[in-house]
Length: 110
Image (tube, helix red, strand yellow):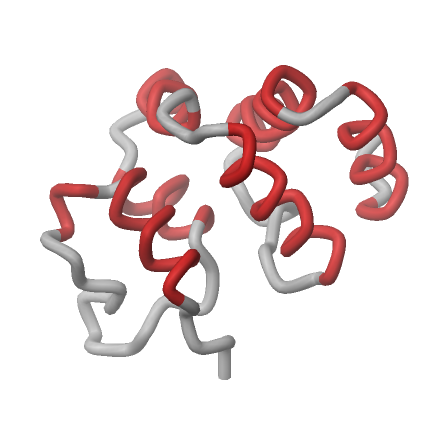
């Protein structure tokens, strides 16, 4: 069972997937356990679309997602390969190169 979305999770999910109309549920009626995985696998049309969605995030939201990934509450490893790269690019650009490196080491994605 995944975690329950916080208000910040909902805000970010809604920003990244406005076409979902504010719902955070899968087609099967289960709450999504992560923010980025359903966007990568079900909502974004392709890796360019995923990258464009991430560009909408502000630095605070980017840091929040990086923090969730550091805590194991956001699954980065299961994103499509190009989307993993886009996530790390976003962390580097919106947060810092140091945070990106720290996260890569923590997740074992070098």
